[in-house]
Amino acid sequence: MKYIRYFLSLCLLAGGILFIPHAHASCSSRQLPSVQSIYNLKISTSTDIGEIIAGSERAVNFMVSCTSDRSGEVLVACFTGSGEEVPGMPGVYATGIPGLGVALYNDKWKRITGKGENCDSRGTPVYTLDSNKSFSTSTHLALIKTAEQQGEGNLNSPNTSFTFKIYNAEKLANNSTTYYNAYLFPTKVSCSVDPKSLVVNLGDIPASQFTGPGTTTAWNNFDVHINCDEDASIMYRVNGAEGLVNGQQSVMKLDDTADSATGLGIQMQVNDTTIDFFSGYYPPIALVNKTLTLPAGIRYYQTSREVTPGSANAAVILTIAYQ
Figure 1 (tube, rainbow, N blue to C red):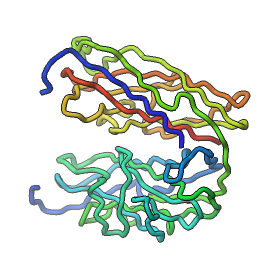
Figure 2 (figure 1 turned 30 degrees about the vertical axis):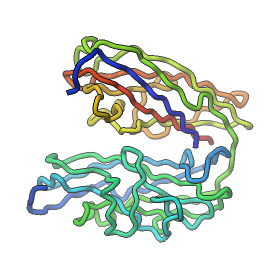
Figure 3 (figure 1 turned 135 degrees about the vertical axis):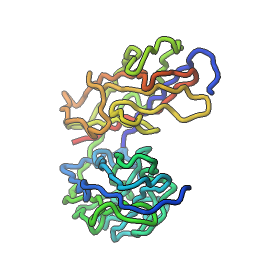
C-alpha cells in the first residue's frame, strides 16, 4: 500500500500547557451486522508483505445506544472467523485464500488482536464508554498481504468475521459482526507516488488569530504525483494517526503529547474537496497517459472556544488505491 505521511508542525506563541459499580443494562446497535463488498481489487506490486492492500479497506461505522450509564466499560472486537493468526503478524488472520489475511483496525488505526468471542482486546479498544448513553464508533476492515503471491476465492462470514461486544458482557446485536462478502480475483499494477512523504510547516501562528470555533488558517497547498505502468483509475482516502475530533467528520486530532496545543485540529483537502473522513475512498479518477497529479492542502481548524499555546503536530496518511 502507498502510505504518504505528511508531518505538520507549528509552535504557537509561548505559554504553559497547562471504576464505578453499576447495574448492567443493555447496549445495542441496529447497524449490525455490517457486510462489506470488494470489486475489481488491484494490488500494487510495491505493497510489502504485512501491509494493508490499498483499496480493500472498508469503514465499519455504527451507532450504539445503551439504556444506562456504562462508564468505564470497553467496547471490543474479536476475530470469530475460522482462520488462525498469521505467524509474525499480530491481529492478522488467515482467510483461507493464499497470500491474504484479514484484520480490523480501531479509530487510531491500531490493529485489534484477539480470537474467539470472549477474547480480551482491551489493549486496542473500539471505544471506552463514558456517561453518554449513545455514541458512534469507527473501525476499518482490511485485507493484508501475507505472501508474495495471492490466490482467488470467497471472502465471507466464516473466514472474515469480527464480533463486537462489551467486554465481559453483551453483544450489540444477535449478529454483532462485520465481514466481507465477495469473490476475490486480485490483479496487479505497478505505480509510483511522489512525494512518498512530505513535511508541511505551517509556521508560527499567534493563538490570538483563532477567534472562535470554526476559525481556520489559510490552506498550505502541495501536489501529489502518480505514475503507473499501465492505464488505471485511482481512488484515495485520508486518515489521521490520532483519529477524529469528536463530532467533527472533517477534522483530525493533533498528536497527543504533553506540550500539545489544545482547541485545534487539522483539515485536509484533496482535489479541491475538504476531506470527510467517514466517506472512505473517494470515487475513482482516471489517469491520463498513465499519470495523474492530485492537488492537496492542509490547514488548522479551531475546535473549541479557547486555544492554548503549544506544539501542534499531526501525522496524516493519504492512501492511494488502484482500479
